Length: 596
Ligand code: FES
Ligand code: MG
Image (cartoon, rainbow, N blue to C red; front, side):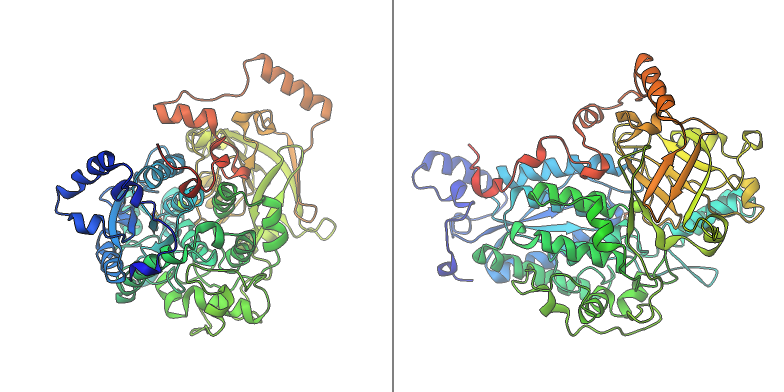
């Protein structure tokens, strides 16, 4: 890449090549020489390409990025850039207590500061494990310097006793068997471990596969990048391509706000439905959109996404795993099928390739019809999310494509009241309360109860816990009842297949009405009307709210770390992406705000 291609001064030249300020330039430069960088390199006018490194020993899902980054660096050097790795605060989904979700915003803040305050002209976003993808896209949105995402790729298929063993899915299965006394603790561990046979992220269509797919659907990845399994040679090859491409993006001045437009988000919502994406997706995409100043709400998810058919037969909604999905054509095949059916609303949306979205996928074909279905033979007709509201909350999300026949026949099959049910609430204050009490037969939970979880939202937990997929009591599981209606102000793991009403906003800890619901209150859920109603009089609700206030307000447990306290003070509800209050007013700062 020759320097003549340069259209405007690079940000990095403020640090390394500012002739008006030789003293500061000398101070900035000298320390980068100490590990072997040369003056010629640093003053060459070549763009400095940051690599936002989420791979580490603490982040096993993303650890393979440490290898892939070598190929990214090769690509950057070949194209005439200079790579510099940026360590990102670790966000390991299954290892971080209390929840990795708490740290999404922390990693976001850290990366914003790194991209803004250091000599970085563009950035490769090493995405993968659940929260790493939104954290990095949010930071790229705020700073708005050229950015391209690179998935680490899913793990290979897992196997247990000759059957496919998928991340998360096998855990739900093992939990039920354990609760029913069919397996012991050692077998539980063996079952769980069978789903993780290689480097990479969860091999089901959980939050990781969803968010990596949506990074591509938003136009932020090279076509095909989301689905290639981590250990495949194509994964290393595309890493090289990403390194080459990001250097050109600097000279084209192609930035996240040019790619992640409202149109791109609408495309992503449709694609999320077709892949059976996780209910965490609305939280994260709403967050990325807010940092770009793009309007996006849970209403949009219902209006744009609900009617889209489910095409991917991948767990938890289907049978197969990510490696099968890749062989069947992967995400490109799904997008190609949607495009040809006219279901992609904005094929003209721009992507990081500089080409239009539609052009990239028009020819992509399904290779294996059992794993990726055609539009004419979908797995479910309506795969998107319902946006529910009522007197219990302003907004909550429900993924109806995972409702199985057993659940449908028990709760949704009354011909006089189609798609609606009601029952007495049973209320748990957080997951510990649930685990302590769920199996107590004296509580009187029946198959007609509605399980409620509160204290599991952004403020209440803190960070929002994936606990709303509550299993039935073990005595009901033994009677073959495997799923019950659940409502909660927390989240649900993307790998869970239960039909739950999730991400309730406002949460109980913020004064939402989940805080005043009592055991035995009747709750009516009407999917046609998109309504969830607490069948308690307005007067009684007002009285309970007054009592709650008089007794000191909703319960919020003590913070355990400084970050928890800061997070609780500043966090917005799930419906607003769980972003930090005030953070979303900072836009385009890599271009408009020169650091002092
Ligand atoms: Fe990291 Fe699923 S736990 S990708
Ligand atoms: Mg998850």
